[in-house]
Image 1 (spheres, rainbow, N blue to C red):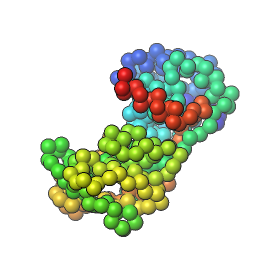
Image 2 (cartoon, rainbow, N blue to C red):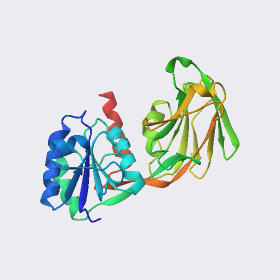
Image 3 (cartoon, rainbow, N blue to C red):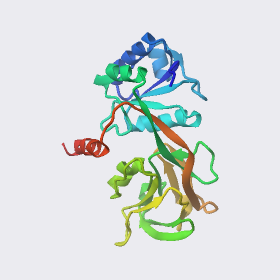
Length: 280
């Protein structure tokens, strides 16, 4: 990877990230990289603003937590730009660099000691290309007070279950440690390509999470008052159901999210260390 132009995105809600952004920008300039930044950073660091369409960068540095990384996918995925996450959040499953190790990790990056980690994306069959999710697609009521509703789930046309409750999550392996885990879904190693179908607060005793191959077509149909339901993609994009459009089909996207990795970490050690933070 020849890093001639680097982009920097920063979550301004993470105030501790501005000094990190300054250090990063200085290190990249010292290596002869042209810089583009988001609206906040372009003003604060006097660098060129990133265009609204194709960012025109070789690598996108994302400073924030996992939510910031998910938001950055809209800029990176359509042009298959790799992302290198700098963790300013609490968990940082998707990030690679801790701020205190930034300069040492940049040395590794520029001497070529890195590799790409490509993660599966989910999309809707027949939808626009920008309609995708890395973590999960959640079927829920638009109004949280609307009460229990039912969703029918099918795999390649075969009924999996009809689930009544607060909703349904279809997660990837990457997203299995996010909302799906909180709802009682299994943890799936990120190298596996699959759909994790997890009911949210089901109102039946037999409703259980199901893991299906990513080669399946997952059909979901809202059975009652579909106009009150929606599908939410990674918490950032909403697809409304209606009486005329009460069903969607989730498939593996032909695109993928590409992350830069610098450290050979054991996934299960990482998992234990990250998730234990919630109990201390």
